[in-house]
View (tube, helix red, strand yellow):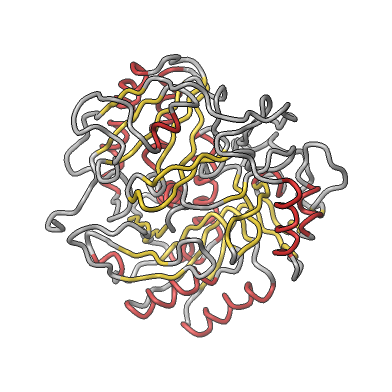
Length: 468
């Protein structure tokens, strides 16, 4: 693990209790205010709990708080190399110490939308012959869901499996499920039971960046293993027990009322907006967005038959064409940037995370600039402009694939980036003109262009043959 690029993100001892003493820019004050306490029991990153997650308040009546990943590239910007390295380390854990790894053979890897679509995909890259699929919340015309899953604690409960080849769900291969965090593990256990009923498998492993299950939830995995008669285990980069008081929802409500919310687009006037750089206390919060920057549109050449992600399945044969393509697309993006060697954010859109992350890594190699990566999200988080809080500001806009609902991006504000590259697929690009360049649209791009010049990269939305 010497090459794992999280070292230096935090100097907290992995074995120390959480929260630490003191205030300042640390988020220990928020842990204390919510009455949360955690103890790390295993850590392969060397960064401690604070190196892998921050803390924020949800806007979700089912759950009061959110452990915000610092390495995932969803709510917080990260260097794409950090997100890819975290996935590679998790894949190594699954190969070396899990039931799936011990069973041998090519596993079927399943990621959860929307947060873990890229993480699961990159974990699958760590297995030479793994097929990958992620769940989806997007209905696709002409396709019937092979299985519906429920995530009862989520802001969006239902998601589906839409593989182009349904045999992915019935081939008796070891199954590796990938999620960014386990709080109870109930969703994973429900998935394992459902897929085992379709076709028994020799082993099941859940791989996660952070395993925060309480003792009772950990015991349920052993119970399910006994019930099914096959190994069912969990591997993680960090494992911790998190104690949550019964009045945590009331505590969260009191915090929101005490601090108030940052208006959309507002952000600290200086200092960090999340990610993997040091947090510096900000000055007075900005009260609005900046003037509109330019918008350019790019529809790069894309190999026929190459999926834009794992919604309908991703096979090992797709890896080579993607590797050959991302460099050319990154070079085309670089030609559109105002400051090619400056600070650039590459922004995925909800489930479309993996390909934008790979493009961000390639763009950094092409330009030599400071390239960060994150994604828009359905997840409603309460922003607070206070030191040590993970989500300092929020932008909201109609979701590109469903303007009737809201999507968000966090910690993006005027002055933070020289350029923003937003990656969409043409099945969701409700903001783009019908052809060529056009006037600035309303919605997501109109909001983003008030933070920096925007380049919209539109990829062809992959739909399996016969689905339309």
